[in-house]
Length: 107
Image (cartoon, rainbow, N blue to C red; front, side):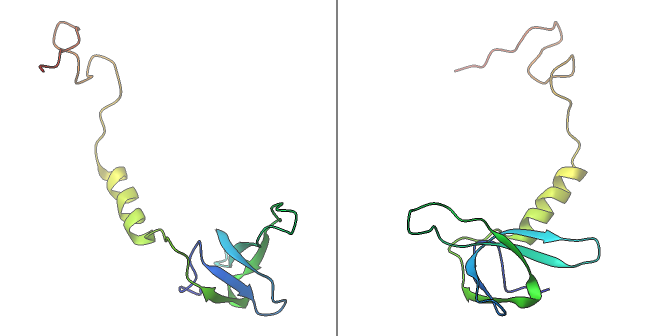
């Protein structure tokens, strides 16, 4: 996989010269990776449809302004899976005291 291309980057198809922003990344079960490339709006200011293109035929034109840190997001997801979470509401709810009444916050 071309690791230099990330969502939000401006990319170009090396075969057709189709250029646009990588907005969606799709990984198939056989590890084929495609990006949806969405071009700029047309002359009437109408959005154009995106096209899914294999990552091997994409070339990075310009880095996007903001990127998602995939590794940081994956660590957060794993941490969330491993943390024990109290069920919402019910008798075990932290804001209820032993008599079943809500605790008042002191100001």
